[in-house]
Length: 162
Image (cartoon, rainbow, N blue to C red; front, top):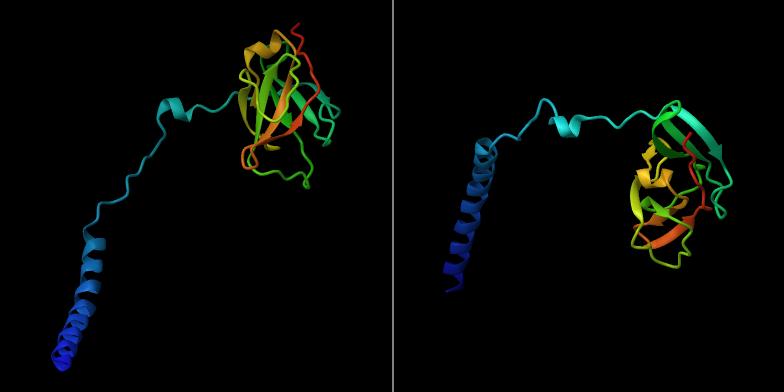
């Protein structure tokens, strides 16, 4: 009885040893090619507007960490505003997001309901401010998505339109 089971097991393993590599090669050969695209659709291909004019640069907006902030504009005396950050190399926080909060809120542990996401924190990208930022003062909030906590809150500042 055991000898017949050993023979059946040996034949099964031998058959699988031949069948599985052949099936794998066949599966790779007949799979569909990966879809490719020569160009992005129009609504995805638009580049963010270039913010070239520096309105001001301040290093005193954030109290806990010295993060220089630049207020940028699309063109002199016209266009939308944006903020850009220049953090030190040792300023490392996981999944840091930047929010704009209108007014001068007292933040505890959570973001208020009127917080507007500007984008991910990095030193290379200018983040466009909402049009509401030109009408009233507000604060920038750095929020760590990984830690689920507010890392830093700026002092309230206003953008004056000429």
